[in-house]
Image 1 (tube, rainbow, N blue to C red):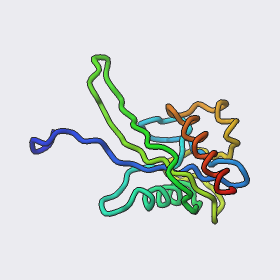
Image 2 (tube, rainbow, N blue to C red):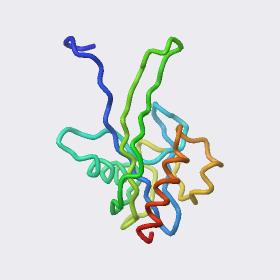
Image 3 (spheres, one colour):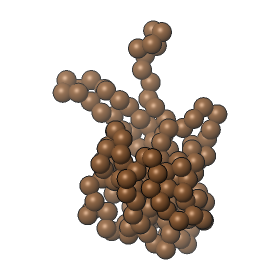
Image 4 (cartoon, one colour):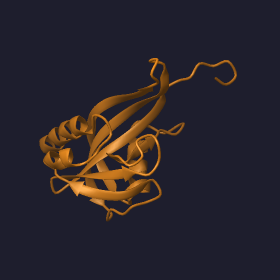
Length: 146
């Protein structure tokens, strides 16, 4: 605790970017989730909307731009110690989007990226709940004709 304030959840945003029926995932190089595949994403900056953060993080991490189609899910990632006390808490706005420009490449936050079919995600070691988020995002993308 700093200055007597209780810890608060971190607000973050991610983006399930679809292109030709496949979604872009990235393997994280930093904690939390180092070595796991996830959607590109990160913290929402002060004064930035969650949608703006999702698009910015996608561009920073992969070099890809996307049009937001909708909110797929709100994920609460809470890590706890053996006693059940919260160690970290993030609220992640997971958006669905359609690729508009850019060729995906790795950046500072990912050591590998892949375009995968939503039904192929089971073959990857992923962050908790990623398959569910991608399934919901894929349904949104399908409704939008992507």
